[in-house]
Length: 284
Image 1 (cartoon, rainbow, N blue to C red):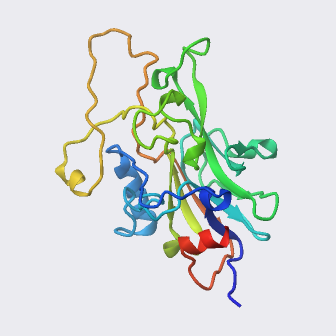
Image 2: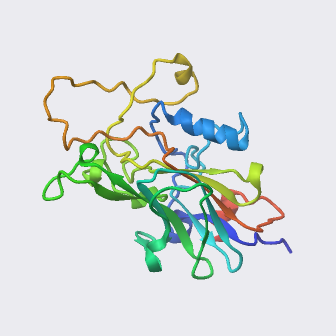
């Protein structure tokens, strides 16, 4: 009898809830030039030429599962190691319920406040086959978010999820202005099991709203375009001295390097690699 993976299985919302996967429709993402910083981090941790962060994220290929979350098994532990975290961004986990996120007791907070070296936590999954993902609570100033009404002029906190369908569409939820039109991509996931052990994923958050405009520009290096990456268009400077930028959506630099974590199911030792198709069949 084939031995089952011990701790953690990857599934998708479509497989569990009866929806259709986006086969043949890769998730479109426009990267800023600072994506190079994430590439440097990945190269240092997993080796050069192993992962192209602009092409190897889950969802980049038509056959990839989209949207994404995890499912825990009966035994074992899910460990979360922070590789990078901005101190104005808190990190937590949530339970998937199909069309919304449910916060566990205590809000699911794993890391908060000032970032410290070597942050690690064990995910307290409540039971068998708990469907879950991660979120970031990012502090945004109103100069970088579309805000109106009594809250204008103060910092706000916005929550971004690994499952992009749980994120709003467009700048501050005002409606999508670019693809994908069914949920802003705020986190990229990579399967890094080949280099660090079975059932391990790298999760990379962007902590500004990717549904808005791009905040940085192409650095003019033709080698960037040769990589097949779509980079941001140059941002026009406004030096007329007026204050009309206050409250305007300045968008995101789309570097996905603001909160970076490694998620690992300790002790998972599947005897055979399981294809995405096999996962979908198992959970129908």
